[in-house]
Amino acid sequence: MSVSTFFTTDTNPLRDALNETKPVFGLFVSEIKSPWLAAMVNEAGYDFCVFDMEHGTFSLSDISAMTAAFCGGHCTPLVRIPSIRRDIITPLLDLGIGGIVVPNVETADDVRTCIEYMKYPPQGSRGVSLSRPHTGFASVERTRFLELANARNLLIIQIESQQAVENLDEILSVPGIDAAFVGCGDLSLSMRISSDPVSGPLRETLEHILDKAGQYNVHGGANVSHPHLIEALIPCGLRVIAVTTDTKGFLVGISRPLHSIKH
Image (cartoon, rainbow, N blue to C red):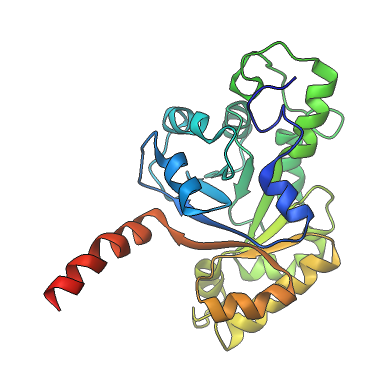
């Protein structure tokens, strides 16, 4: 079963790195639609890439056209879904992505529903369709493949509201969460506090969430880019780190040489 996809090989690079408690670095992608994106993010050294279906412009067809190039590479493709729906989660996982990112999780039932849709029985009720990209269209031994897929699909939930913080113990106690990722912008808006994660209430809340995640053996994550902040939060349990977006990275990259010439 040596098919070149994430779930039929013996390893999932992102899960392996997390299991070794290494910090992993990625970016959110909402606009760039190129079959060469995988090559670029691999060359740049990113560990994961999140295709954003919540705020971005991607369709299932777009993601299908882009994910194949990630096979065999270091960077693992993930997708942030727009909502918790079976008809979104199932086809995405059948494309062979490394896992899903779920925005605005606020209750334990939200987590249970995600697991129900993304895991094969007995953990969930995901439907079986093996002649798909996630098997490389190859003939696979069903029982073994389903076990591998359940073990390697990553579930990353986003903590983005005051309600989620209040329900944190209830949420994190549900088995099957791989990472709890703090959406700093939406969380600060919900809590009506400054969006600066370096100091103040947001920093305190961020550290609280990371600490709670660790207590439940869940990896902590956040969208933070300041090197000193990242260095300070890694001992607190920060593991899954989104450092930029495709649009920000593109604008910074193309503006730097222009500014150096003009100024």
